[in-house]
Length: 192
Image (tube, rainbow, N blue to C red; front, side, top):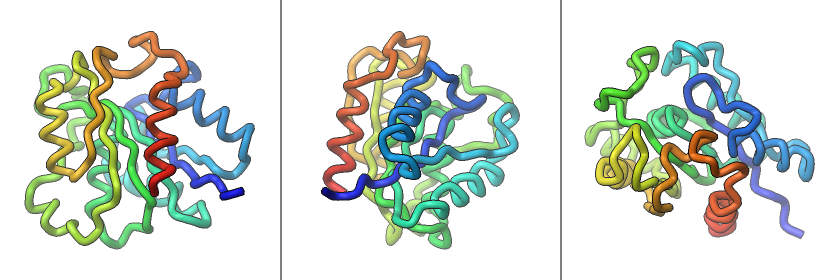
């Protein structure tokens, strides 16, 4: 039987609580296959510092023997998109990106003001490091319009999957362990 590709969970600001799908997936994976999942541990959950988050992603990725899949939500998506731009970072197999917030939107947390989206110049510089990516887009995300999310996906070279009206794809959306999302991740990972 083929070994499970490891995951690195990259939550958004304030970390994902115990009822968030990321936390539920992590607990299930940890119970079924110990050592096949890790979670970033930045020191700056409440006032996110991009360099602290980048270092935390690097530590979590390096802890695995093989390149993992990054499983990011919300601000974690921006952190991953930025982290992937640096060719000195360790390799990853892919990036599963869910509900990126829009730094230009009025609802973007002021505490996360240091985070930005990759620019066209960043993308040109990082084109050799492009990794398979899937961006999950909700049609009614209060933190980024679907149209701007699709534009973000194009900028980072991610495949887009629209999942309908799921808000910010979080606990408030009422999706629980989000089995449909887990199926999307498993299908994506199976192709890597």
